[in-house]
Image 1 (cartoon, rainbow over the protein chains, first blue to last red):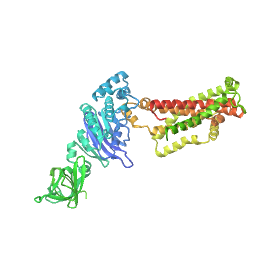
Image 2 (cartoon, rainbow over the protein chains, first blue to last red; image 1 turned 30 degrees about the vertical axis):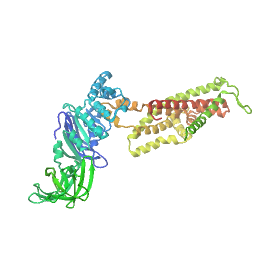
Image 3 (cartoon, rainbow over the protein chains, first blue to last red; image 1 turned 45 degrees about the horizontal axis):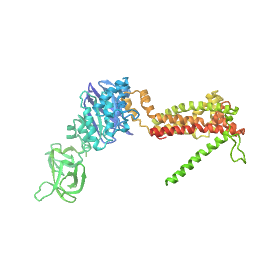
Image 4 (spheres, rainbow over the protein chains, first blue to last red; image 1 turned 180 degrees about the horizontal axis):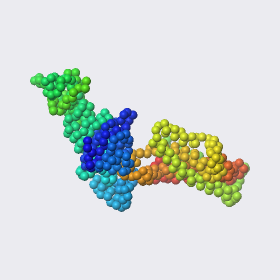
Length: 348
Length: 259
């Protein structure tokens, strides 16, 4: 991977993490104005990657470049990288405007000039009327916006956002997410690396998505590439494609599986099939149905919709169903979107 | 508990706390109060201007000077040590906490004798500087334990974020850490001063009778049977802790911070 001349790059980073061997061969490159979202399950080491890039955590080996300059051994204040913690760490002893002016004042700007710039940034996040308030009097969403304005006041080459929305309740998330998108819309702005374990959030925010799994970057690409064509069963499962079935492919490329016979060319042998639950729909079985059938063993009510577990050919399939007649022990027919089914050569 | 019960309890606690001070005040200001007199003689302020009174004033000044020097220095040392401890591994932290606790729980006389060996070697025994250095030992122990408690609740991620915002280590310390810990630092300085203020055994052993702090003077007065001046000295000794408690309570009420 070639490091962008303007932006942030971590090249072949080995990052100690937890009690194990840590992360290895981590390479990320983000151009200015680009948003890379690093996704992965909780506890996989996403925060360690950000902290290593910011100079706050250990980097056993590798190189960090900012706008082409090597900052691997530079102190955190001389890297041009701002790290934002998941809970906004506003300075409680300073007013909102002084919080935003902080990065400018530590760079030697006079208080008046720094406050002038800070007020302009507060205008952008629509918080000017609260400029003289203390952080503890702000709501969660307002704190996030102040923290973001403060981060941008530092004019960083790169901005690292560590689970920026995880401490917000669902009703505030969308509002703050939109603020982030508005503020970072400028393509000449900083290179942004955002960490989350929420795949939907990644899809909304990312120009590119990197999946961190099993101590390495397992896949990287546009949201369409990664979400549409996961490279392994593990990635697919993490991305929410939780329907994992087993089948067998013959020499003609025909796969026999719980979803029936699918034609996907490839070498003969056992295969794993993965699809998201929404790609399979269950409806009440009727006499003239000749397709896939099974028996409902459980009904799961979710915010995203009603799901049912269907037992077919000794395997369970999670399917969506809006029909209230589909209940436990009823026989159902299944409709499958074949394009939503991903096939992988079985590891066993 | 009813409101009436609470009032009784508050009144009982107030009497419990103030009665000894009131008795000291009476004993310090009246020349005599002997059986069968029901009320003491009329108060006489001459006690303040007597030779013993002037000695007390000098000892009071020495104790104030020692407390004023010990408080800030032990607070700084305590916070610096606690900071190092907070960033150390678990075993180092346990060892450092025990090391800080030792001068606090060790019998003061044993601590004084131990420190005297060092003071003699350093040729500071019998000097004000020697007594001050000796006071720093228990005071820093207290302050380290106090600061470990304070720093455990301090979110260091705020300092990390300040660094990436462009602040140097010094700027983080002066613009973020110290202002944020300000009220706790003041409490620490007061605590360190009070630890020094009440030191008797250490002052006695290291001072060798040449450095007359208020507790040392109080002991001498009581041993010589001068109860009136002894009561005055005891009264003076209780004054700063009571004052500090009041000021800290006031600060707590104003800032909402816990005492």
